Image 1: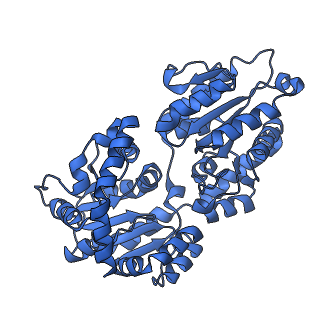
Image 2: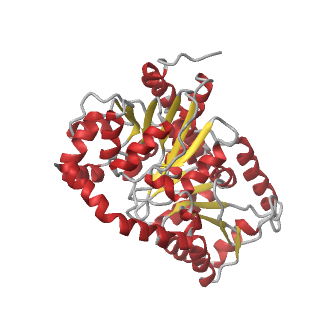
Length: 439
């Protein structure tokens, strides 16, 4: 009965969903593309090659899936991968990461019975792997009916998400019970999943620790840094503070705090610092540019710089996609976006892996255990607000020994927690080895 009511609600909501797509496409035209896929319209797959389907809703999940997809392609050379998303940015990220490889891409259809059934029959996957938090009741039921085993990998469930899930327990519990595998990131995630009826969940770690930065991106960041340092006036040291993956409202707080902390002329003359702001969502690039200009800062936009342009600005707007590894290679310190206001925090693991000292705000429920562990390892500092974040960042850039010590501890912390990909592959092997790998 619960799923029947849920399905009726989906049908009633479809006019609103289509209106939302149209509205969103005015700012992001990519939302107009591949509309049929959102209703399960796909060309039927002609060959019978083994196909592993992974669903990664957006950019973060797509990056998290990268080491697993690479391991699958390497271990099973006769296997193809279908990577599905819900957002254009996720799709664009996947296209950049896996260009020229045995990876198909599509949008996951809306959770309507006819749409998910058509999707599964068109692609006929050997197994489906949902990444992190994606649990759609009609999709799970259709996969079971079509004989497609489903796994939830890199599963995470925050306290906030658990409270929401309990309100929808008649829907969530049966869907969770129908999955072939649930593989949790942390012990805390496993305990919360048990409260929804899924017991004895293996804890395999976080795939994000296994993501390796593309060397070309790191080299790009090093080139930017070398060109920027070469413009030092009078031999004064130069420093860069990166605000990574900022969310709505955070940029204004950071810019105001930055102005307040740099107000004393002695501080500004002692070192000419650069603030780099990289918004989480590309549709906000122009909005953030306007915020910076309104405050009178000399600004440059990454999109208007040549590849190796010498950066000459007080604030640099990182209005490009897929270059976070380059920004971390460029930066001295990183303030993690989404953590200063209650968005749950963005990925601090990538910064630690790059050896960048990390500052997080009070809101890290999306990465609760990783944040707590990084702080305990002295790889990260937690602050109460944007003003304290800027204060700590400037203190770090002035203390070379402390900055280097935090950098070393950040790298060591990330290295200690690697290995989730190998453990996940081992858990999936009984399903994948039904089609023996060749070679």
